[in-house]
Length: 382
Ligand code: OSB
Ligand code: MG
Image 1 (cartoon, helix red, strand yellow):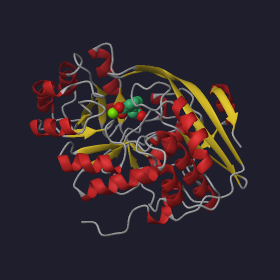
Image 2 (cartoon, rainbow, N blue to C red; image 1 turned 60 degrees about the vertical axis):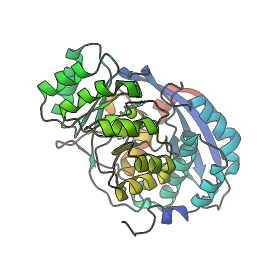
Image 3 (tube, rainbow, N blue to C red; image 1 turned 90 degrees about the horizontal axis):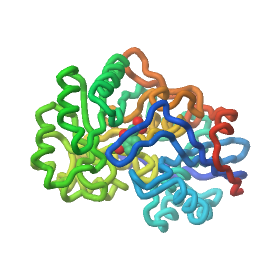
């Protein structure tokens, strides 16, 4: 058992500075290709951004919510409402991050909204101290493993082409989306062509426990895991399913915080956890979950919400933390965008690794012209 102090102990004592201006922006960026899942096909990334100006410094935060509630209950609209009406009024110069978390707990749920504010403030503290975010989290720099999430394709040929280019790029693992009727055959085709790649599937909750015998067919393909096979809301039925599968179950949608992770682990509902920092309420809760998982022999990795470069940079820094044992959903910028909001973009080195952006805070610069071009809503709150 790990007896070292909590991974967030020092972060929790850090304080928020003077807040001079707070802006919310909504941006809409076209994807290079539609991203299909069992729940929806997105053609654009629409994201809520927060910009905080403090003592001459600027920090950004990106909310991972979509404009729609198809993956998760929060939306850019609900996040804007919760941030404006309930979270920002709780900010006070001089309070600690622990104090902020305590105040935020009064608001039930809405972890994506909370993460937006918390992450921007942590980023601001890093900028104020002049250190990269990973260093503020208490973690040394390292090369980050890459992973790609390949959406549903109309044909097997298109899927194979996408996998082939990911293999050529040396991605450390490849995830393919599946849904009922577009699953076993597709996985079999990929496996036949690429017998040795680290492969996994993500169903986004498309199956029911009655499909257990069907899901057992995945066991033939040496998959790293099957992500969220059953309902977005469920932990218990996953615990029954996991006992019937050889393949590891990974939970995504069902995990909203450390308490859910502990429940899932206690029930044996999964052997792997996808930690999306936004979905669990921010960087600090993510670090707690990753540490807790590691202490209980459970692997964890950093999920993604096809964020712009702002959210991606946060995910990259986060993956230096203890417990992020597997490659996450962190792919090159070009997989989603011709032109992202930030520089530098994410690229893989020849071994498929990602370098942490250097410099204070998240280490990427928001390019003003691009932001203006993609902005569909802007409001100054302070
Ligand atoms: O289930 O992990 C998911 C994107 C949007 C909503 C849900 C999911 C995803 C991804 C993309 O799989 C991961 C990424 O590249 O950011
Ligand atoms: Mg998922």
